Image (cartoon, rainbow, N blue to C red; front, side):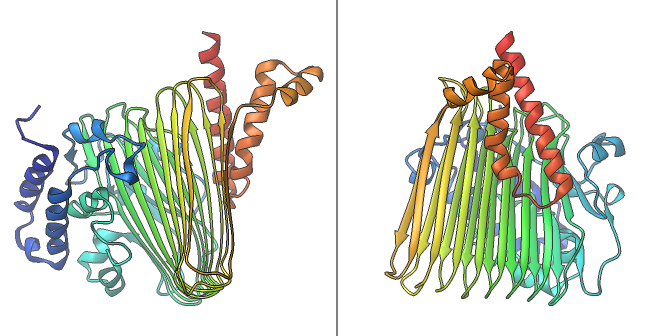
Length: 444
């Protein structure tokens, strides 16, 4: 261990070393933002269980590790075969290795005039006005300590810009591959701007080719123009030793429609924050989530839906399947501001426990400051229905297979809501694979 006095000091020392490599860029507006962010992080540090937002999730294993930021691109032994293993059929794919854009593995098909699908670093270096004016504008750099840390080491990620009135037919895959052989930190920063009446489908995939422990600390900012339609799917399937913390922040214009499907499978400690601000009338959001936990995994989903304007609707369904000694956390907040009359909001959280040692902490929340609204929320926790298992067994199906069928049916309620067919097939295959792994563990 390096004799640094605290985690805060460790990352400050890493930032100082990073700053010395920048030469003239150290005086750029972006680096001034980085400097402000590292100062914020140095002041507030990692959260503890005394912080209500982190009450059920200890990040002590992350705080005590000395993760070294990956500051330069290196292929790190990644091959085209590796990339293809995690890809699905689409004309637009951006590949990032340890947080840095890998142009030789990426491919972008023909795009309508004005559309940009590429590296955030390139957009900033070329002074793209849309990137410069919107970066770090959707959320405060001290939104969480992890957002501060991400901003401090902000270098690259995806930049997607779709001008007014343009609809993209093909999905865009953002593939983030971790492959370093030593404890490391990657800080992807994605910025998505969709103009009025634009339409796009985006898939963020996080995978690993290393069994090393590391920290992925990702931030995605989404700006949805009036009447735009956005589907954002996220698949996190990293190493079981990895730590994954992510923030997705979206702000919706009038009559915009935003759908988020978040699937978490890998990782030792996983924390997903999804925040949507319905910032204009008649906007609508749908948040769906599925967690598959085994062993000693901890998967924490925090969602916030902010009804800031009247006549808006939100729908939320988060499910978790927990086996072994895994733990799940769900904290879903719905805010209805004083002027947000005619709000229609529904939130549902369901957890399926496959073992006696698996646990979940669920906390649905409604904070309503308007009187003409329809808001409901609910949470259920349970095990497989013995009568349903018996029914299937009476039809000649073995006990394990019967449980698998019921478990898959529980998960498919979320998977079926994914509209990207190649991703949906990938998720179905992944769930079957995880069920097979669980069966083998029980037979040993």
